Length: 300
Image (tube, rainbow, N blue to C red):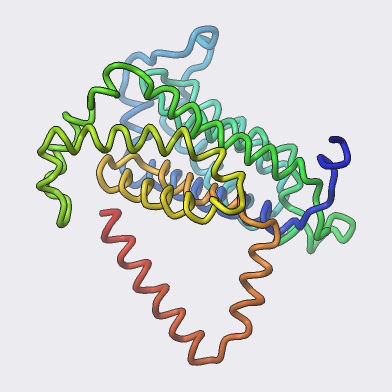
């Protein structure tokens, strides 16, 4: 078992995970400024409901909270480009955890997940490839990392799906609630929105979500079933993003799925596209632009 844990695997997949994590965190910080959430959640309220044992955690002044999010934005950028990575991810973890502990009433499961992932990333060699650090420090650069570095993230992401399924094993969810309350509000959904007004749709989607969550982790670990569960989960997260408007979580989880791909996938993808003719590359760029526009429309 020890040999399997420390078996060398390509470092590109973990580096790509770091980049995607940094980009999504940068987006999340931007959202706080764009929607005015810093003032709304931590400046205006006269009282914050802290977690048990953390009553000593309190918001800073208005300028102080703004500075916290500016620093987190800079750190998210540093994580993305892999600059002073160990320092950046450690301070980011501390600051994000601080904001998480400020208000229990604002608990979201994906905020807790960000705390866990950022903590794990402190100890992972995610900056040995595709990073400024690997350019600045020649002894750091390496194309290989121990397999446990990938396994621990696969396990953490898999647990999210598994626990999500276990949490749905209750009488309310199995009877179609609260889907039967949520879905009618989105009857304006393109093409199939009218179906959301029917109770049968709520039940069908409740059971689909339950089965998908419970099956996701084992099917992701099996090579033959991985492509199919990938497609199902991407569709699942895109639908969640459009119907429920739950922030970064669907995109975070789509990005996190890449940790289940072969560890050399970024390098393999680059090699594949490098063989394209200029015309084929132009077609791919055009298709990517249209896909991005379609994704923006779908995201609203």
